Length: 437
Image (cartoon, rainbow, N blue to C red; front, side, top):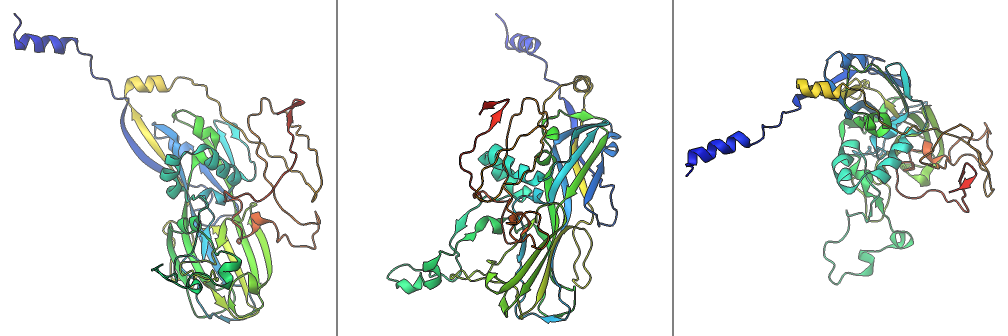
């Protein structure tokens, strides 16, 4: 009869060998952009991937993150000094939902081959993918780090009664509320949190001195703005470049009455894009001290005041603000893996994968008119069609009318960072190869 020691020896002789660990360790590293070492840019940011390839480790591009320093400002844009009657609130300016709203287009070159071409409105494409491809767990995990929040409307809480027993009608409803329930965009508050430093003042300010300065750090997953890096396997000794063309805006606002800056006392708005096609920020007139009547809060100025609202990828400090950004440069962070010999041999073999390339076509549709548009770019086997309405002047091509009705360029519109519809189509028919789909 076998003893206990004999049974133990037999069991150890037939059990499988422990599985070999594929990787010895995982590390995070980063490279700085090769465009500027001062934090000032001119519309484009470049990353040279050869610095990462020299580390002789495998890179998981799906985990890569791009960090961009963001500066938001409200300046005195008039010709004379201004004394504020109320200072800006802590979140007077906030980025639109999704840090990728600061990205207009991306070009990727890998080993001498252009795997992604410059196509405008990459931020719209990233928002569409987040709404259609993320599940709830992805939203909970990646939403806060990507500065992305869904539209969520709630009644403003400050100023409301706490006890609902035997209250009069006037305690919870008034003329303003009865006409239109003063909902606020709660997601807008959620995305206003990741600021690093800000300054808002109540003082006499001369021309182009800041009423308000805020420094943010936009964190964008590389896979959100490039399908190539989302689909490609782990790579070693990758060489190439990433070119990011970003969105930067300057909006001039002129008031015609003393008081809080709101739609009722704004006489002119001039939206200008310094770079790109989307204003990446929101003017938050329902801020942290929202009243129960839905009245605008925040910055209050005298009549005939001109404000200059700017949003830029900028890592420099602002003179007179007394604050500085937490990060002055743009960075590309990647995770690197050091493999064991057996894993190294398997991973360096040639692999084939497929990814989506996006092609943009622009056409003009007149109000209340039907249209037919033929795409003749020779795309084989198209997989997806995204239609993006952009509202522009009623007189196309007119240089005499400022483009104030384009919601993409306005800091008073959540478009395109919204889950709510902002255009309607009727009788849409799409054909591919003369076959209706």
